[in-house]
Length: 259
Image 1: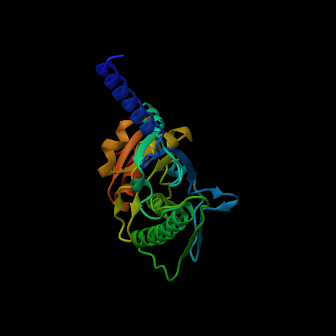
Image 2: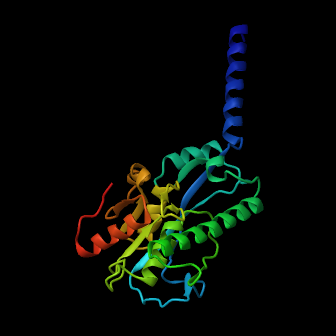
Image 3: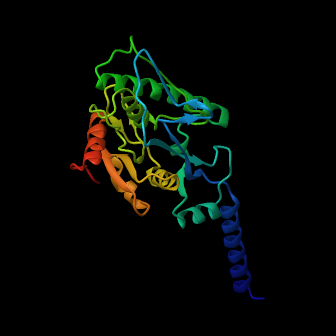
C-alpha cells in the first residue's frame, strides 16, 4: 500500500469516526409534540377547572380549550438522528433546549418554575377577566384547577372561560356559540395577549380534540399557518376584549379577524 493510499485511508477513517461521534453525541435540543388540551369550561380529573364564588354563574355550552405541547426532558439525550427525523415530520418540532427550558437544570426545577408560572397566569387571567367585566376581585373569588399543566400559555383561555361563566357575550348567549374553540396566549392583568411558541403543534392538538377555531396571538399568525390542519380557522387576537369581540362576531356572523 502506497503512502498516499495509507493517508487517504487514515483520513477516511477519521471522517467516519467524526461522523459517528456527531451522530451519537447528545445535542442541546429538545423534540416537541402536540400535547394535551383541556376544556376550561368543563372538569379536569373530576373537578371544575373554573370555580367562581361571590357571583352567579351561567350554564355554558360549547368548549374553550387550552392547548399545550410536550417535549423531551432537559436530561433526555437528543441525537442527530432524532433531529433529522423531527425536521422531516409535521407532528414534531426540533427546538433549542433553552427555548423549551429557559430556567432550571433538571426536571424538578423546571416543574417548580412552570407551576409558579401557571399560578401567576391564573391570577392575571382572573384580574383581566374581572377587569373587563368591571367586577371587583374583593367581591368575586375565582379558583382555577388544572393538573399536570405548567407555564403561562393558558392565560387567554382561562380569562375567556371566566368571562363566559360570568357574563357570556353580554346578551344571554355563550361566547362559544356552541362551538369547540381552542387557543393559546399569555395574558396580562390589563388584558394584553402575548406570544407563547409551539403554535403549529398546538393547532394540531386542538384539531385532534375536535376544535374548529383557534385563537392565536396575532404575532404568531405566520407560525400558526406553518402546519395548520385542514378546516381549522385561525383568529388572531391581541387583547382579551378583542378576543371576546371576535367570538361575538363569529357567533352572529359578523366580521371576524383573520390571519
